[in-house]
Structure formats: structure tokens, C-alpha cells
Amino acid sequence: QVQLVESGGGSVQAGGSLRLSCAVSGDIGNNYCMGWFRQAPGKEREVVATINNERYTSYKDSVKGRFTISQDNAKNLYLQMNSLKPEDTAMYYCATGGSCSFHGMEWWGKGTLVTISS
Image 1 (tube, helix red, strand yellow):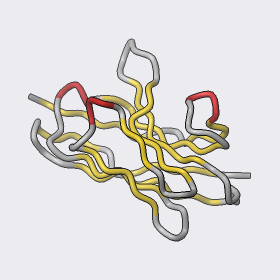
Image 2 (cartoon, rainbow, N blue to C red):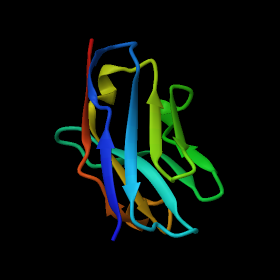
Image 3 (cartoon, helix red, strand yellow):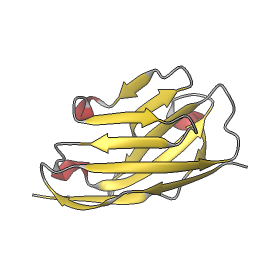
Image 4 (tube, one colour):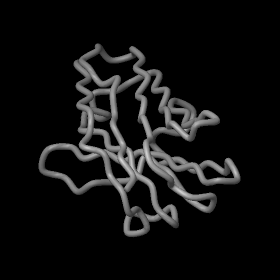
């Protein structure tokens, strides 16, 4: 059983920064992808950034250069978010699975809310 617990969300003004963390418990295996997804009110959940077991990273175009995904040796996941914009407001979820697509994610956290004011 894998459990993912997000933290670090909050309310900041545009231009500010936040660092999200995802604590991982259980065995996610050695061939995996982990990612951050977000869902704004009235919108579908979308991928923000992913990282796989080879440390290959991928980002949504609108966050490139502003967000950085990383992982520590215990496989805990992080998302450093800089130069935040109001359109980044959403519930952010941590997920992991066998592939980096939305449907490839098997385990999900409950989310942490990020609110950016203009």
C-alpha cells in the first residue's frame, strides 16, 4: 500500500514562491513515475510536472522556467514554485504510477491548496 501526503500549500501574492512536499510511504517500486497535478475550480485535472526513476523530468509549458520538480533519496517529492501567477491557483496533487501519463498514475494524495492573489 502506498500513501502520499502533500503539504506546503498556502496563499501568496503573485510573484511569490511556494514549495510543495509529498511524503511517500510504502513501496513504489524501482520503475516508476511521480508527478504533480493540479485542478482548478471548474477545470479538469492537469499534469504540472513529472519525474521518473531515471530522474527524467517533464513540465507543462506554462510552468517551465518557474517550477522545479525534485525527489530525495527516500523518494519524497517536491515542487518548487517561483514567480507564481493567479492562474496557478488550484488544488495540487502528488501521484505515482508506472507511467507519467494521467492514466498511468496509480496512487494519489488528497491534495494541498495553492491560492495566488493578484
